Amino acid sequence: MSGGTRVLVLNAGSSSVKYQLIDMLDGTRAAAGLVERIGERGGRLAHTPPDGGRREVLADFPDHTAALSSMAAQLELDGMGLDSPELAAVGHRVVHGGQRFTEPTLVTDEVLDHIRLLIPVAPLHNPANIAGIEVARRLRPDLPQVAVFDTAFHATLPEPAARYAIDRRTADAYRVRRYGFHGTSHQYVSRETARLLGRDPAEVNVIVLHLGNGASASAVAGGVCVETSMGLTPLEGLVMGTRSGDADPGLVFHLHRVGGLTIDEIDDLLNRRSGLLGLCGDNDMREVLRRSEEGDEEARLAFDAYVHRLRKYIGAYYAVLGRVDAIVFTAGVGENAAPVREAACAGLQALGIELDPELNEVRSGEARVVSRAYSRVTVAVVPTDEELEIARQSFALVRGA
Ligand code: ADP
Image (cartoon, rainbow, N blue to C red):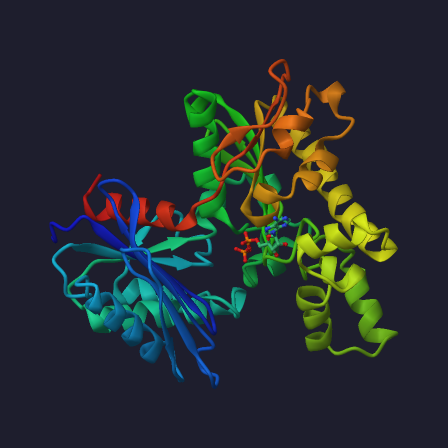
């Protein structure tokens, strides 16, 4: 086993790879970067070296091998190449772990085969994650590669929450169940919230609202996830940037039979042309807020629909948990959009939720409480850090901790 203290975290998407080299002694970033437009013309790699500057490579990256080789060359320039003895492991974000992978897992040929088997349930994500793993293994065959699954934290969902109420045999034959996503973020944020409250995670019940481009809510009871809003795919649940979230499955038949749309067109509609974008033409919450402040009615409706769904989930998860100690906002919208937090918590005093309007307006990158001191339920903003969580879990696994 390597005696290194650094973990390289890879988050490989279909046309991009994000990477961070994290020093586990203090959690700092030794380097970070992003490769974009893989497989297209006009690719770009943006690298942040340890001194905080920035380097850019403009080139075509025909595939993930080219992208990761270029990343490796950048790390090499910083004296932290993939052959560095400092490197303890590579931690890979893998979106779908199915029912089998409920823990961070050391990658073997057999594990990789099983991740491949899950491609039908994550056709957009798992192939890219696999490509990242394969290339990293080729570049450094002796180094432990750890897969950390977006679904893993939700593996504890009780059966009544994980099952769709459809014919059991059909569901089981096609592995149809509620898996949930963003798990690494929900896990990290729920634990950091307990820390912010100065309490043991095993003692606190938390509703986590991860509001980024994709958005999901989860109910975490004593550190264990008992409900989450995404399901078989990341389409279920909250209104998102471009995804509809919850919708009557009957609308698929309607659009197909009456509207003549193909299944692929409906897939595209619900995943890429719905949510805030579908309602008002903008998927970025900053734009939605700016326009609605100027009195734009479509933007206002998009904001109101977004918040309405959020409030339904807060209410539902309150009932699921019975007792709520904290509601926590995270990711791009959750961390930055004070009006979303304000509207989501408005009028919920009867549930013990009392936002402090002044604290809520404070801009900060730190974990912080934004509710009044006497609020029975603490409302908090906790910045998520999926890469750090992946690095921690990978490091713990290779260290046998
Ligand atoms: P991803 O899901 O891609 O990781 P992020 O968590 O980075 O997304 O969130 C991105 C979204 O956060 C943007 O689309 C934007 O809507 C929102 N966002 C970022 N900054 C702000 C801000 N200051 N105010 C409102 N929304 C913001």
